[in-house]
Amino acid sequence: MYIEHDTPRRDRLGSDSALRSPRVVASLGVLALALACGDAAGTETLASSESDAVSTSPTESSATSVAGSTATTTVTTAGPGGTDETSAGSTATSSSSDPSDASDTTAATAGDTTTGGATTSDATTEATSAGATTDGPPVGLDALGSLVVLGDSISDGGGQPPYYYDLLRDSLTTHYGPIAYHNAAKSGSQTNALKGQAESLPDSLPGPVAVVITSGGNDMKANILQVALGLDGPVKMAVASNIDAALGELLAPGRFGPGVEVHVFEGNIYDASDGQGDYGANGCSFGEGLPMLPVDMYFDAWNAVIADAVDAREQAPVDMHGYFYGHGYHADPNWYAPDCTHPNAIGHAALRDLFFEHITGEPAP
Figure 1 (cartoon, rainbow, N blue to C red):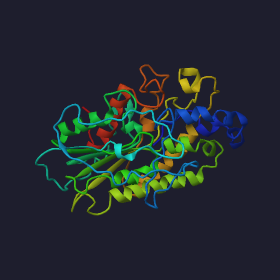
Figure 2 (cartoon, one colour):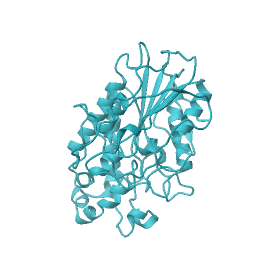
Figure 3 (cartoon, rainbow, N blue to C red):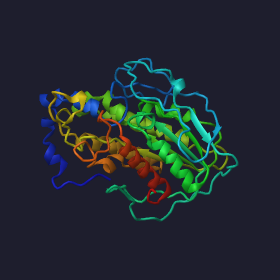
Figure 4 (cartoon, rainbow, N blue to C red):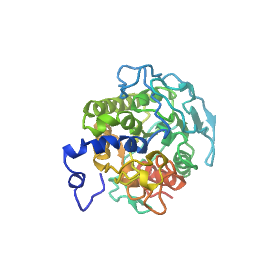
């Protein structure tokens, strides 16, 4: 679901020829660096070694798989801490950084041997937080045994703490009781890393398992020229294929043990400019001197691809773009860190609320 506007976005953005004008091409750097996910200093490409994880970076030549990293298990209860966050800031062009530090953080509580039993509620009321609405009825799991987090820097130390995934873990522990927790997200990663991240997870987890994913912005950034010129069809197909491959791994029968249910909640790509693309005029260091470029239609097209891929596996798309819309740097307070890319503390709290509402089917505490 997308936010409705009084004037159709197509009319505001103009014709295809206008979108392909020299002004648009000259503004590519603005959109590239303002995309929601990943490292503001550059994009790190992490490719799965499996053949069905498709690279979407045109410059990628020697990406490294994150598959095969070893999960460890410790014991924790509700409360702060329990994760090792990797700060955003790495850069790469045709190769990835060492995948062994892909936030192999697992927290498990003793005595939880649930293997299933989650059901979907019939809730029809959209949960709200800070004035934003979620897109449709949340899934509403009646029980939860494990929380898994995959994706990019939004889920790996990007922005200002406390981070949403730590807050979400603690809120879900309070709501359901002790749960296992594993974070395999990697700052700078693209969708072609998701399957490898999924493969790095333990063979056994208490169920039901909720998997939260933030990914896609770095793919968009790496292919910004094709996006602006309307030539990104093959790239979007690759993104859909990568998401499908990752979900196929996560949803494989018995992936986390016999009878363990898995429910995936995949976020899309948000925009700190709330569609205006005026990054240079609003204090974003990367946008200084660059002209304004309306960007709603680009985000809409990419987010539709993400939603379709998740829907095809009968899992839950999570509309981060719609939820954050209206809370960009024009708002006071806004939900973004000074880099105009990652959530600030308010944004991370809002993101916790959004995923909590989808997982539990209830308003966040």
